[in-house]
Length: 507
View 1 (spheres, helix red, strand yellow):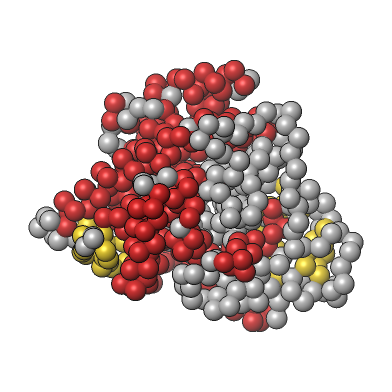
View 2: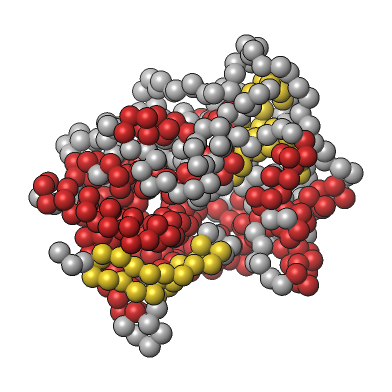
């Protein structure tokens, strides 16, 4: 079994240097440039007339069809899972909305092959927010792997996480204790319900800030406003990619307001300034280390604020609600299975440790299944670095250098030719040898679950930490509670979860 933090031990965390020889696993299911036994086909689809075609696709995507139906109808129409289409936001924010969409598990992983694709300024798709949102820097997430500063900054991230690994479990458990107390207080109040998203958002921000700086955000200018500051800052950047779900009569008003011109960074300047100032003051030792690596202090701070706010907090406030949504939908039967495994292993291991967590194979499978069925970040973009060939299940297609490639991850990770009962939540899907082999097709981290983040790839540097914390969340939850009831509704960023009841553990 893979350990939770491959290469980590209690006493010997991994360390990266720029001179480390890195062996990247490029075993993509997509073919090499010239070798394929599949028939070549022209990529079907249409971009339509300039301006009007992209506007039509945009309205289908947001208002007439919705995300999944938008892609499903085009797969059916063109009898292909590799198609040409336009992606939002389109005019006038994006100068070129045209993409080649990869909508199956075979073609999608070419987006991870950095010898064939480049990731310069494509984090948000066919447009890039102003660097004024990030202190004037193109932060690491927008850089391609060929840019020298990418490897330098990502090395800094990886070393920072490695240096903190002993704190992961005890620090997160302390934050979860505050989170569960908050939920119980809200349930005991007048409304008899609790907003899971609000509570877990505060817990995750406090954990991240304490982990990276060793200080509490309330001791800085950030105070208790961290989650709302991040949310405001993110909303201004990502508004063109979202819809508020308003009644249909307001659809075109919304479309004009948030997708005609990008929001300027100055409208969220005060929020970002607080986040930056809080990190700059509390994270002085971390920034000292960045300077020793050769990164300018100011640049390092802006990169860390982006990583904490956009990558980490922005991901967790979506990932934890997704996890609890699917666990909640599993009902008391699933809750009983989780509680039994968690309590048995914790008792046998005399506590919550990395070794204990690694033994909980069913709990691990539940986390991976939630990540498979509803990826927290469903989109992936890249540009062809050179002329290349991409394969689907039944055909090969030529993509020209410079063309934008888009992957819709939910269609890759719910590919019925890879996963049985692909649309169903199967809690034990990843248990056992055959189940673990399917981890090769879990792609949430900008890479395969069977691969590892390095300075020379674009895989999430905190990939293993995210999985660890999701498992740890379930462990702490089912050590305290037997079951729970909840409601959920879809929102701009994932499901909004309302906890209605928590039944205390009966053991």
